[in-house]
Amino acid sequence: MTGLLDFWNQSLPQLLTGFTLSLQVTGLSLALGIPLGLVLALTLQSASRWLRWPSLVMVEIGRGASILVLLQFVYFGLPSAGLTLSSFASAVAAFCWCTAAYTSEIIRAGLQSVHHGQSEAGEVLGLDPAEILRFVILPQGLPVCVPTLLGFSILMLQASSLAFVVALPELMSKAQLIGSNTFRYMPLFALTAILYAAVCIPATIVVGRLERRLSRHI
Amino acid sequence: MIEVSGLVKDFGAHRVLDGIDLSVQRGEVIAMIGPSGSGKSTCLRCLNLLEAPSAGLLRVGDVTIDASRPVTRRQRLGFRRPLGMVFQSFNLFPHMTVLRNVSLAQERVLKRSRREADEISRQLLDRVGLGAKADQHPSRCSGGQQQRIAIARALALDPEVMLFDEPTSALDPELGLEVLNVMQELAAGGMTMIVVTHEMHFAESVSDRVLIMADGRIIEQGPSAEVMRNPQTERAQRFLSAVMNR
Image (tube, rainbow over all chains, first blue to last red; front, side):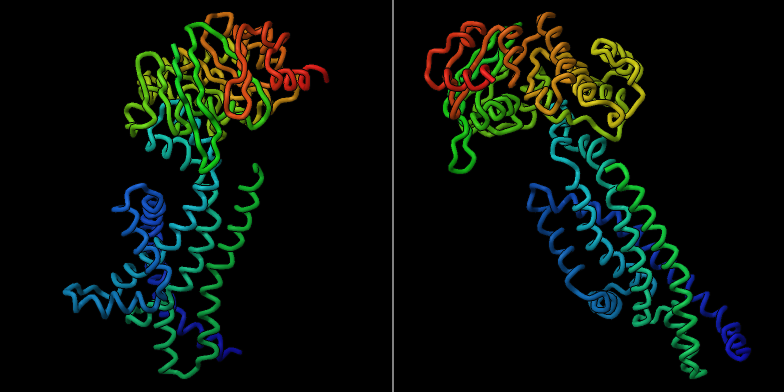
């Protein structure tokens, strides 16, 4: 038992630096990806096909291709097109793409949940489409999306472990590294799992509370 | 004030409005009655372009819309500017206070300052008897109160014509009465109004003219009491006897 705790104690600092990086990649991807998802949600409903088609391609590739493919495409593929990104930048770019694609659907559903009469009311009051969006639709539609977006964010934190394939020294890579030196995989991955769970389980509880709170007024 | 000629509206193969001709004088109060599905609401919604008419000419004030030509956003805005609209389901903005509901469009559309807009809003809310509700959210108000707020919100833009789409149909009779009283005061104040309604008493006693619609046409129209008491066509007689003798 003490042997296990000693081993955990030794590995923890390294795992924590990896986990910090995991949180940074996830946080940055969400911070860039969710606003982009909002933009895509809007352009997908646009009347102009010059906006709609490129958005559709972005979303369908982001949702259709696996994250592993996106990651390796950005990291290994783009350099042959003359664009070389660090492993951190590649991971953020790929996760951001994936986030934007998935959240665009979540946000679109949220905005469509706002009753049609609301935009009609804005229209007959003489508000223009941008004003209707800003003052009427977004303030009502976005709160609806929040629990689903948080749930998605938890999944993205877990998916950030995939960034080890582009040599990003995040939590999973660190665990692999320690494991290949010590061969004590079992206790090592147990600790890794505990670290992910330490963030994800409380977050899930928050999401549950939030969902109940938001549905109270409906 | 309003001139409609040859208004047609098709939903796919289904013709909902089949050649509506209508002219409304300034200050006139018109009640549109008729069985469900007769096209009353669609007619009203075409009048402010919430539904795009399939054919016909619409004129409000000096802006004319020709359904056979594409309508620009600017034309649509200009056309709607003198029209106020009240919906059956109120459609207040639930995330704003009552005061913001009434003030928002004044600030955005009429470019009034917030202070000026709020002042006008409070006056209007007082006028519909809801000055005390200004700082609450609509969900804290009864249906009748919400509909009166919706009327105040429409009046805040200084409309020349008010369109009402079954304003009391979602309300129980007692709450509906509060709304009808406000509408009656508006009518007495000289507002031009077109009211789609199932309130026969309102149609008979408040409006100047009654239109009876059936199957997408106006089948009968004239001075209220005359049409209501002595309808000429068989279809109108059938409808009125169904709603009056219950």
